[in-house]
View (cartoon, rainbow, N blue to C red):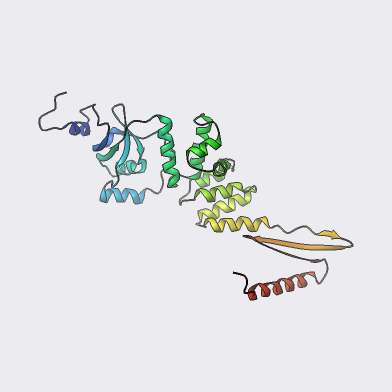
Length: 278
């Protein structure tokens, strides 16, 4: 193809007059040449305001990573940057063109990148992992965990998120703040849907992983039912916080409540005065 006077091949690529695309390297191309990856794990794009404003003021700092596809490029990484660029009306964007890879390799790389940065929501990630298993990309959860550099226990925890009630999954999916994978996994391990909802609400309100864990631990300590001990009835209460378990019990009777409170007071005094506890 003969190039018009004063035009480079890259100029033609940008203007859309040439179907010969650069196959590798760093270039500025027409944004119309880019298409999003339909297999991208991210399905929802929230909290874009800050990124859009940054692109409006400074442009795209880090190039969008793409691979040649047909008469354009498929986006590998940078879907948020691409959408922000379109939102502010950019016509040209800088891209880093990489060699085309087989779909499985490309999907694993994208998945690992998103997991490392916790760049997609827990529900979306769990759905992607299950879809890969259902499609036979890998035969087992153990192998999938190995491929993405995670333990099998972590993989099982992510799969358990999809066993939560759909309403709670949507609450996590439509979050306005970032809820980490560990928090989502801990909530999914709880069997009581009412407690799960309480924990989701707490996480959305900004509680940390440690605070969520303590909530779960405190709810595990359910007062034991009164039991017979000879002819007397024994009342017992147990609480667990972290690695500490405290139990108080007394024979049922008019004095039981006061005796139990006094025993707890004396026990608290011992704990506060014992210098051996670090």
